[in-house]
Length: 382
Image: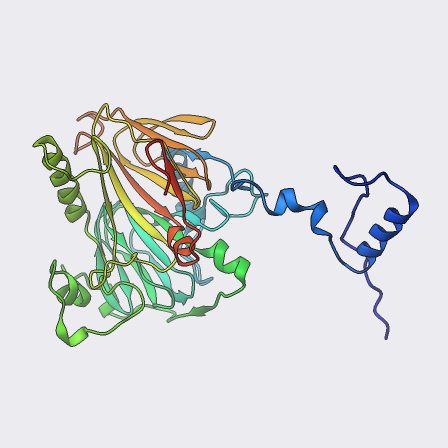
């Protein structure tokens, strides 16, 4: 059987800038290139090797009220299924053709769990985390270790760790899921496994502290019995109370005239592996910002892309040519090499800390490992 080859996907024109006048010979050469599935660099160098990154994504903001309303309506209509995923609704960047991607490398979604529901157990190579925005009385099982989840907590199960969730409260839980799905999809390296059909009795208990936290939840202290290089962080949860205290201390040090902030009025912490200080996930960097009222961040560009969520407070955000007013829960995307600045307008009426608090995750570790991470601010170029 002879398979007919489809028409060549290559389409070339001899009318290129700085090239000789069009004659039959160049036209014939270009048709031969098309037939042989070849593309001469001189016809595409501007697209393939631009002067600086030109992202396919664009800045965008999602209002939390809209997300929460739609997630709640989904909770009333759509049960949590055995498809391996909890009730997660992905953010879709308007410039990426309808794919469920926040940026070309990052996936972000609101996950919504109704009272009494179990999210199915599964695991996958995609590195992931949960950041809890609303709800208490919920826990996740990481490698069958029950871990309490509370507002402001950051929970990063590394790829291929079994995980599931249960809501024992009488109110829904809403959290942000972040994964490197687009990156792993494009490099074609992903795997997925289903877990147990139902959680065990132990999976429906709610200890104050997980087994992992008893080992790794003591700052600066490493259990010698657990030493040895391992993938990802041994800590199942980074508690919101600890994050809050660290950021408050940074701003208090600044107020007293001591170094501690990255910009005037701008405190910043990074979630890291406690044993060596590496990023908490191999492909995702997670950080938390606190910006004092009236302060504005130094405009910055990075080669990687980021997703931000306003944890509490309000402010003005400028991303490239887009500007928005943001409030609690709102999410926005910063594509690669796009100028970002944030001004805090928080007050005690919309923020317990009295400042603008933002959770951020990015693909910086991928670029750093490839020696491709670059950042530019008004003061420096690194």
